[in-house]
Length: 301
Picture 1 (cartoon, rainbow, N blue to C red):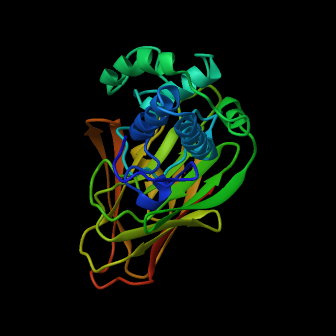
Picture 2 (cartoon, rainbow, N blue to C red):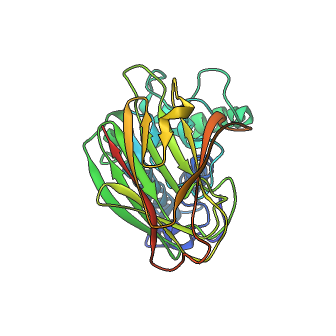
């Protein structure tokens, strides 16, 4: 379990620390901790507190999760992948056990990146997920569109979840490729793998937010580095990304840019965790900073 956890009347203050908030692998470890707590508490009161922490964390998982897309919406403070059907994320294993059906579970039946996490299977099975009744429906089926905000640490996440689309964003302070400050997910066509867009965690001084049904990005500090995205979808074509519009399989994205912002490059890369992706970069004027919106992405079905 991540450090800096506290409880008050059984409510988990994970959001106040923000250490591993919204993390596919580490929420799985976080769920293991209160499960051990409730099962092996030294007193009834401690057991009740463990169950309360467990329930609150499951509610957070359910709020971000889209059962039809079989993934939680970002942003992710730390993640090893973008699609839990193709890599072994511990929260996906918990969800698979909770719903009791491998077909819709966000857990690869075989293969997948980060396979070492499979060793947790017997432990999680013995502990048994105890999902609150108000959170369990979110894990089994899409329960309807929603938008919400969630504060963790000194950061606020903004989220939009719809039938075939979801977006999430937060300004994360650390520059790290395992941080995913903004994400967009969609289903290009029935029975096809997900498409996704990632604002990488290596961007310098970029503040994203989901507002007015689009992903808006501002420069927080002066920088001569491009704003960088990774894109992946079935049958994705390099020519799809143009300066003002991305015509992606099953999704069009209108791109609005501020004065001086230009498309810098579109190129294929082989990412060690995500596989073959399209990398898209927009250059911005070095002096751009503060409240100036550099660009926005507006998905259009």
